[in-house]
Amino acid sequence: MILVKNLKIHSEDDLSLRLDIPSLEFEKNKVNILLGPNGGGKSTLLDCLSLNLPLDGPGREGQIFIEDRELSKYSYHDLSLKMSYIPQQLDWNHSFKVEDILNFSVFPRSQKNELTNIDRKQLDEICELLEIQKFRNRLFSHLSGGEQKRVSIACSLFQGTDYILIDEPFAALDPIYKKKVAKVVIDWQKKYQTTFILCVHELNLASLMGDRFLSLKEGQLVKESSRLTKEDLSSLFETPFEIFSKGEDQIFFAYSKGDLHE
Image (cartoon, rainbow, N blue to C red; front, top):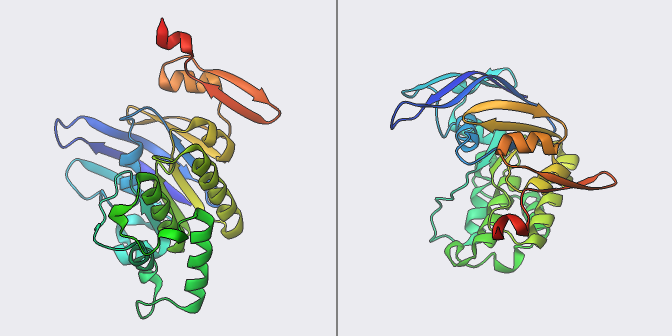
């Protein structure tokens, strides 16, 4: 479980309040989905959870607990054994091959900074799942945006942590790979009881894969639910949503051809 208490993050530019969350709990062994408009505070929250934005900096206050231990008590190494985080923008050394980047993911839990036979087998399985095996020997910088995204997700899985945070896991992916990545997340969570915290703008995929939805708007948590509704989405994004239902499946529409050509 991850618990957030009295979190306040002020902008370094104009000291405006970017996040103001009195209390928030991320349930363990669930797929937690962060939703909300651009600039709502989702990425900032993930940065706080991952120590990318430590709370002891200026204009920041609050407490975050991971399984009853305060986040500030974790070293970066200790946290890397508990949590993996893939930010929205990848700032990785592009001179490395994909294979090197994948291997780096196991170092926090490796005794001798090298892969065991079990590690190699699992890595092969992950690469098969995400269909990245064919370019493992290529430079990361030579991959397309969608290929880089799948490599980054493979790294997060291979790190072997209890918590996996990914900011926009479906960005740059085509429809086929969006579906495949969503299935990989669902299957991984069921097999390993991993807790996922995902910032997602693909609302239809979110509705199909999420166990819990947390909506952020203007830096505040405005809704927690176990199911998306068109009313909640319309309020969150300030635009009318329509819904098409087939059995338990739901498809949300925020605009039509008429909206674009009127």
